[in-house]
Image 1 (tube, rainbow, N blue to C red):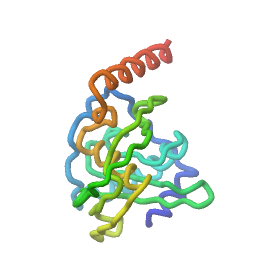
Image 2: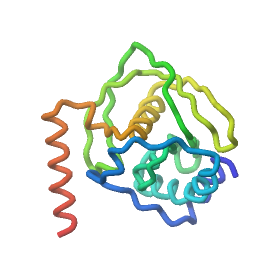
Image 3: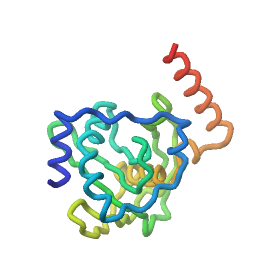
Length: 183
């Protein structure tokens, strides 16, 4: 099965629960995906895509579903034109000097948004589901999304790019909303 097959399987898959901060796994650096992990990774992809699409979101990293490994999914396509990407052991190998500010949110910090400054373009290296090493230049929203997901693999949340004051305001607001939700 390829990325499109797993993305399509999301329609009938049970969505994997997405962890909400401050879960400890969200702050851990994920371990490298090894060849023996691939069967488990593939098995979980339909539920991971289902969770991302239902949220709705455009990216989801393994730590966000409680798996401390270095893989993530991204899809900027519309429902009728999916563009799924599975990034296994991704790394940024170069980045533009030009920075861009974009509003970011996170499925593990629901309803919280802030402007984050990141490189406008990056070159990313990752392994595909077929086991191929891919190097790809990306820019714009895709570059932001991939950088955001790689941050998750390093235990970094988008709020960590903000001032301490702004970060603490967002985390306090999230905690208050989650407490109210639990009743």
